[in-house]
Each structure stands twice: as structure tokens, then as C-alpha cells.
Image 1 (tube, rainbow, N blue to C red):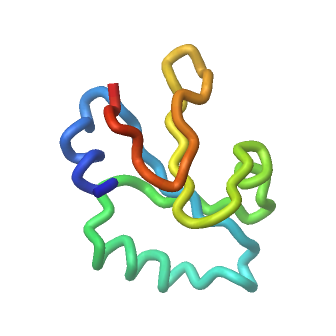
Image 2 (tube, rainbow, N blue to C red):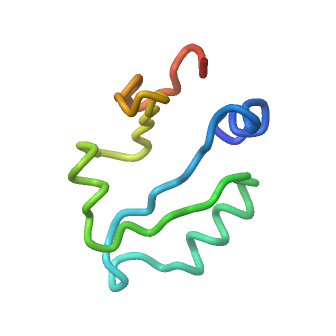
Amino acid sequence: MLAQAAQQNKESVSFFGVISGPDERVDDDKVRAVAKRTRMPYPQIRDRDLDLTHRFHVRGTPTIIVIAPDKTIAHHGSRPPKTWR
């Protein structure tokens, strides 16, 4: 669903995946394999020190956060928003 939303909204919305955890807990090769297998059309960013995870109160996978142009959080949840506008 996210991959489809990213493709449909690529001109107006930037999508990023955030992979939380230090190197000893995350296998980068597996991350790349999953991204390729699921055809993720957006970059995956490593959050090795968990800064983004803590800053955005990520409690599980997936956590979907939409940041509005005014830099406020427009959506925070485990399901995509009803609209990406």
C-alpha cells in the first residue's frame, strides 16, 4: 500500500523508510533484499542511534508519519492516512 502511494504521489510527497537499530541488530543485506522484493520505490534510511525513532515516538512497525509542509505532524499511526493531500 505504501509503495503504491509513493508511486502515485511522487510529485508531491517524499517517502522514506526508517530502519531503526544499531549495526549489530540490523542486517543491511536483508533490508535491501526486502526493499527490492517489495519494490519499495523510496530510500531506506538507517537510524542507528534511534534518534528518529525516539523523536517521532515510533513504537512498532510500521509506524507511518506524515509531516506537513509547515513541519507539523499531519498523521501518526500504524495505517496510512485516508488521503496524502
